[in-house]
Image 1 (cartoon, rainbow, N blue to C red):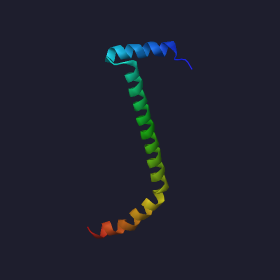
Image 2: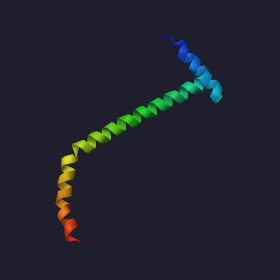
Image 3: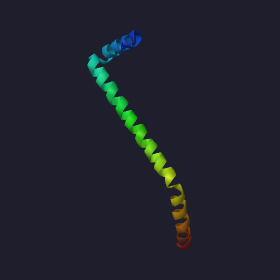
Image 4: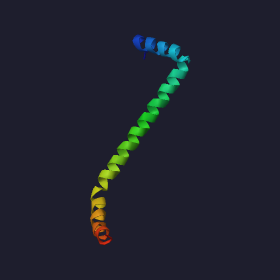
Length: 72
């Protein structure tokens, strides 16, 4: 697989602007990609967990709503 010339040119400009090597640029890009991917997976898992527990959360809130009113 070849690196597209336009992307290589952009990478070279970035290395010059940032004063880093091409391998450092690639390392940073891979780290950012993996962190972003991990964050997206975690957010998806959290959203699925919240959705899965919606009914339970509502029933608990309804159960304790009466307690909240009794304290005032």
